[in-house]
Image (tube, rainbow, N blue to C red; front, side, top):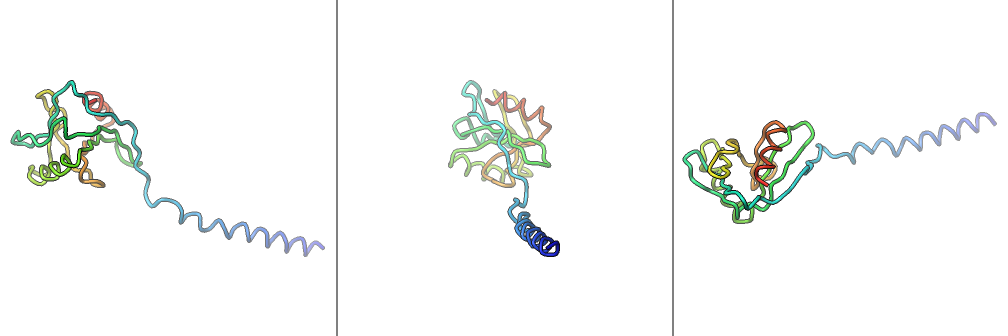
Length: 142
């Protein structure tokens, strides 16, 4: 009787572990991107994205939203999303700009001077820095 009970328990335990070994396959390959905050661009300020020569590429009407994004293992960053036409213009701007770097100008003053294309979605602009800077930029723009 003890042997039979032991065999039943072993079979039950083996069946429990069969379903467990495939669980790792369901996990995402990399951590997800998280949107922490999103707002529209404030209409109270004059916004522009310019190159190092001062050429204005994008203005208020080209931006649909301003976001603070986060991905595990990275700093939080500011992301600008554009209208369809604005995204096309942004791609042209990054190709023509020296080293692909542009600046955000707010009311005639440079707010951020390291705006690049987002690697995951090149039609979005991205500005990286420490969290305090990113939140400061976000609050000024929105």
